[in-house]
Image (cartoon, rainbow, N blue to C red; front, side):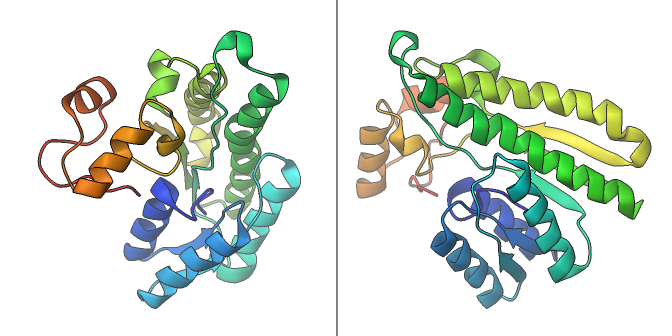
Length: 224
């Protein structure tokens, strides 16, 4: 089960899992995007079903697990990737800006992990929780109070759940990926650079590779 799997890194995770032989529940807040991603996996010879819904609350989390069990008989792996950005400096960030990002990233990770862990413990055969964090959660980022706090919290939850779920043979890991995606394109400092790299096929500039770990010198830039 991969949340936020309609595009970007989430879709890459879903396609990689399907390529390795997993049956994948493709979640995305946008139903059409989820359906297209699931269809593409099936066309490539994989097994996938779309399960749209905006993560955050318990109802969506439990429905995703129920879909996995109904379609494929069990749940073995959860990747919590869904996310949004509402970037503002501290003195301009509204309650809604803060709450929206915390709800999707932090509460969405919690509710989906809780539902998945409950099912995995019932199955009694272990499992894998893979939580997607961000460099912003490790070092902060200008204008991203909400996002950085959520991503740091995800790492803390991974450490805690790893201890709590060890006896059930459920491993918990936090991954801190870096990639050019449609979401990173919304960051004002990144947007023009990513658009130019995509237009020309040139490598991303040195400051973006060196300071943000985004891209590398060599192959043309690709926006996921």
